[in-house]
Image (tube, rainbow, N blue to C red; front, side, top):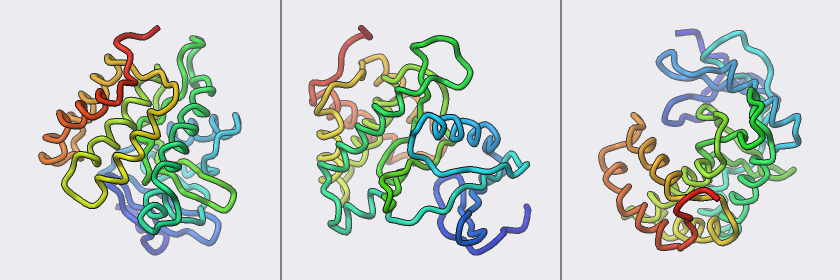
Length: 228
């Protein structure tokens, strides 16, 4: 394992973030995983299309992604601190999804194929002084925007049906996320649930919540049976 460049700033399910200096941080995938080169390429691509992401620079490593150090709380931290309303948080997530899906996929000539984040939720949005910035692009791929909406909805719904203090704000965010027009379909929801259940970072308890999460999403009445 390479020596960390600086002090540990934070840890997620699959990676750790270390300080490099005041301007840059390094995110290192654990157990030799990740595709830092591919992830960085997508981040540069969406940044070139005006999407709010951290700047990145080459690291020469498959596991290490060097990116701009951001200042500000995550969207979740702001909601818990009372500085961001949960309804507004859900609306911001919806705007970020809509904006992202204006960006064509990096390696596709199909105009229907868009860049997907596939993990856009309140812990992956940093509220900087310049506005929200989206982090953690390790799941990104090209595809149908309906799947991106479904993944975000499932993540929020899982939190909403859990027996913990995050349930109420998560339910409010989910309602706001799905309040306006979206491409969310039943097939996309089924695929998001399948992927979530197969995610090795999910605990048994989290997987058991997926049935209730699906019911909650369907109860919103915003899910079309098929793509139009």
